[in-house]
Image 1 (tube, one colour):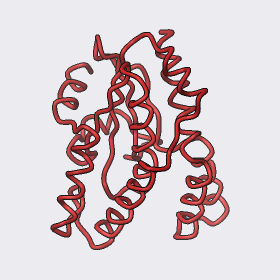
Image 2 (cartoon, helix red, strand yellow):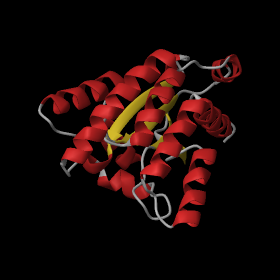
Image 3 (tube, rainbow, N blue to C red):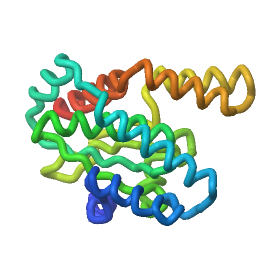
Length: 202
C-alpha cells in the first residue's frame, strides 16, 4: 500500500495547482477527467465560482483551531477529486482552510480518473464516489483512515431522498447545495478533526 501512496503523492497537485489546472482546462472548454461533455464543463464552471466564494467565506471555528493546534504528528490529507464534482467543490476548500491552520497538515489532491488504483482502494459501497480523503501519516506514509464523500448528515439527506423518490434528481442536488450553504463547512471540519484525533491515538 505504501508504494501506491507514494505513486499517488508523486502524481498529486497542491491546492493552488489543482485550482489552476481546472481554470486552464475551462479556458479551452474542458473539464478534468476522462469523459468530456457540455454538462461536465458547465458543472466545473459553477464549481469554480463556488470555490472562489468558499475561499473567502469559510471560517475555522476556534474549537477546531484548538484541536488542530494540539496535533502531535504530521499528516498528509490526500484528497481524490475532480473539478466537475459538486461535493468536491464544497469540501476541498474547507480541507484547505484546515490545512492552513497548522504546519502538521499538508494537503495533496489527485484526480480520480488518473489514479484508478488509489480510487479502487477507497470505494464507497462499491462506487467511485468523490471527494475521498485518505489520511496518511507523513513519517511512514501509512494510511490511517479515510473520510468522504460527504459529511454524515449530507450523506443521510441523499440516502433519505433516494429512498423516498427512487432517484437523485435536480431537486435533490439543490437540497444538498442548500445543506452545504447552511452548514458552512463545520460538519466536514468536525468529522475530519475526529479522524485526525483517532489517527494520533493509533
